Image (tube, rainbow, N blue to C red):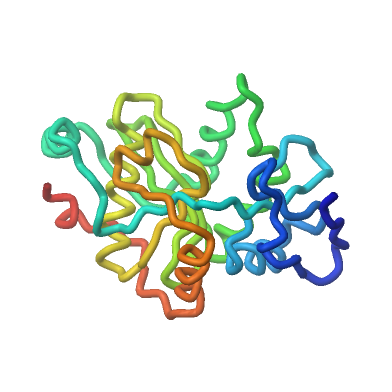
Amino acid sequence: MIPWLSSDIPHFPSTQHALDDPNGLLAAGGSLSPEWLLCAYRQGIFPWFDEEGLILWWSPAPRMVLIPEKIHLSRSLRKTIRRGQFTIRFDTAFEEVIAQCANLRKADGTWILPSMQSAYCVMHQLGYAHSVEVWEQDSLVGGLYGLCIGSQFFGESMFSTKPNASKVALIALAKHADFWGIRAIDCQMHTDHLASMGAQLFDRPEFEAMLKGCDCPSAADWRFRPELMHV
């Protein structure tokens, strides 16, 4: 059994009580308001559910994290970036990025439901949620979105309609995060795709020690700097 949270004041049980199976399930209920989301992410907790009206909160362990300076670029990715096939922008099409992430996963059952999209769009308007976009001419062909709180970035989802586009988005994020002093990019769960880019698994104490970055001032100005993409 997991606790049911009222929607009044944001309050979560200790992450030590998260279930082992399914990995990380911590609580249900609450709200997707900015207050609840900020409270959750600062503790390494995130919402993930596939049924409107039932909010589930998770804190899996171990946790997949990318240390920005350790981003791995394959030879082929370096060639892709040098060719200049893609243009990278930040925060110019946030709603389209999150919609593309949702649409790409419809066949498998998306967790990016309309209520989630609305909640993160509000967080974008408040300056917490950001998008990294990869364009080919005038077409959005890849990107990612997540929350930046202090010197911590919490990745939520990415999409790609052209080969390597989502990888280029992650590289752009990592290069800028390293420049801004963002210490870690939370990738939530292990995937081979993320592992190939340099992300690693950290146990709960190691990951939660990183969350102290949420209390640090942020130097991120979310302006794209082309010079950081010289690879």
